[in-house]
Length: 321
Length: 290
Image 1 (spheres, rainbow over the protein chains, first blue to last red):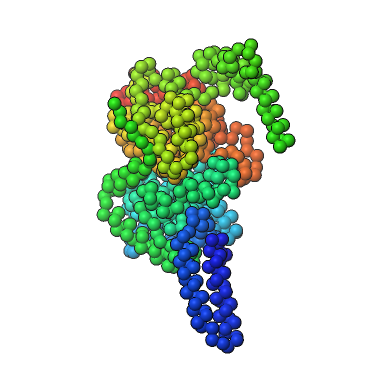
Image 2 (tube, rainbow over the protein chains, first blue to last red):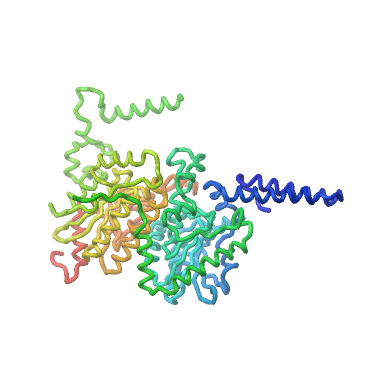
């Protein structure tokens, strides 16, 4: 059983109590079934209440859950014949981003995503899912390869951000991200991006210039982490909870602002509770998006992406006399 | 408490060393300027005549957008675009619009970038000049929209696009909408580029964060002014993450040039001539005066 999060503690506690009661009933050989049934009904109500009233900060916790499914989990569940392809051909292989070719419902596709770890050891190997420039350059290489062979590209976004380090700066972190934004704009194949966990700033956007953008229900997409926003805005990182609200970073916020195309429902309590069921939801979403995009011509795909980002922005345009 | 009062005494002392503004008999403070690099004191007028470059140590002072227009464009040719766009407050941040109003008043700009069309040594170009005196040059919706419209104009008229960047990055108060301006400006640049048109990015002090990770790095030529701070992540963030001492020149233009991230560094005094030459070298039908 995975560790419980603060907001869902009442649910977890009640579930534990029911379990204990069942054990006692078994050994005491008395009939407790009606009591257990009452409690189970109450558990269902409590679950419904808590999971349908999640605050932005609760969702941040779910998005960051150590056991939350990662890119490789979804690849395994959703695609077949996956072959991982490595390296940027210039510096190295950044394991904070993985990518490769696979088939999806009989169609060859290219899949690219941020990859974080679930254990400390794996996180160190994956640099906590925070890429260096060579990660973005590998991603771009695979996108160009997909374009050559006319394969749609599916990107999974799951990063706190591009890695803020000395080597990353020396090798052009800014340029690598910028280049991806620029080149993704011109791709002649369908591009679908799904935020599956945290969508942290430019490091997330570098896999996000897509025809269709979706977010899992409990994922976030933001210009800065809630902690970062709190420390800059109010000089106090402990106000992250308030910042999570003020910065409008949930899937529902982004849908309302018209930035994303849709929200992928999560299983109750979060994707980590049932990876297979979650993967199926995601698969349906990708299938639907692909069927819409497969009919567009190369020029239409590029224009569609242009219009999508061209219209983002809120401002007032005054009449000119 | 004690530390704080000590600090404030230090601050007062520092101020006193530069110019004592409290004494009635001292001359106006802005008559003289002390270079923050070499500490030499100059007549402000002398500095202005030297394109705001320290005559002693070559320190390049920040410039306002209009000052850049005056030293870059042929006199009387510059026409400003989209001055009628106004910032709104999509995330309803308290006092955000007041801050915009104050900076707008201070700089005479509607937002942190001035865009327009004009000529440099006779060549028509579209320019965008960011102004770090306006909300640290940060990019929200209006900055993204003005730059995108300028790029689209350049594409429409088949003109080179030149940008002077000066920005702390994406503007936090507009949240993820600011982030998306990185993509918006980049898709517009891609279209401009696909038309075979020239884009020159000149990074001035400071160019960081989301601006550095979008249009600033996408020039056919990426140029910088000497000593400009250019980088993706802030120095303090990196120091906290990697726990190692960063070199003195980390994230300076010279550091980037040495690491292969820039085409060239141009001194402000040669900027106009070099840009004019570059534009002419990219004109169809040959070059006349180079």
